[in-house]
Picture 1: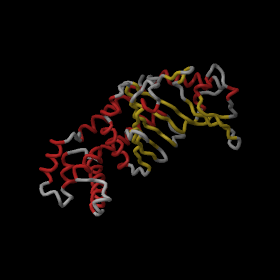
Picture 2: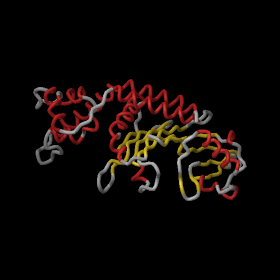
Picture 3: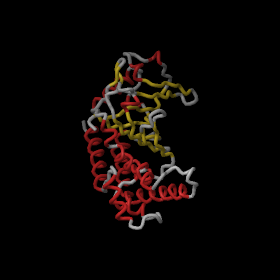
Picture 4: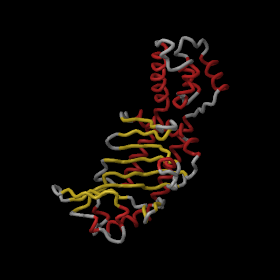
Length: 294
């Protein structure tokens, strides 16, 4: 992830602001502008990375502050007067293949966050036509995180091909630095502690899914065999230990260790260790720190 920075942010500025009040061509940076007369404030959504018809992510925090100051001053608003309620920080790779290479590891990270903080709105999306994986996301009132195929989402027009985005919401009264340097660091630290719990959670669901399928008539079944089932859901199986535990839950498997190892020898499946999870979290924190110190 070589391109990292704040994608968009939203919040309130005092008094009435309309598109007619915007000078110096900053209209392109304002995705939304809505006055709330009952509170005498204007809600705005800002993308400071836009310039003319193009968009290029600002990868230094000092330059981001400079651009935000310019945008708000062009609306006769001081930077300190904006009450930010949401900010999106993204990590990006320009390599199209990286989305597929890191898809499973990113899902593991997102799954750990979902488990640690009991996210309820968790989903995976696929293309309607070719069934290719497009995104994995979890969302709740105060935060979201999503990994998505930015190349496909932008039809190849964006400089980013693979994006992992952390979003802070309901952050009124706090700073962007606090959200991403403290709150998100806390979330990431807690996520790595539930590595084992995530594997059990997946196995509990996978066990039920396969056993429910076994109860169906042969004509109604979704899986022709246990191997077919494991291949379809291998993205949710992260370690050899998890695989042994999973296959050991089915009566047809007499030797779970042998079955797990034979499956690994015969099929392509990627395993991770807790150190892999700790490493990616370390890198995300390092990239974030570098950004806010730039």
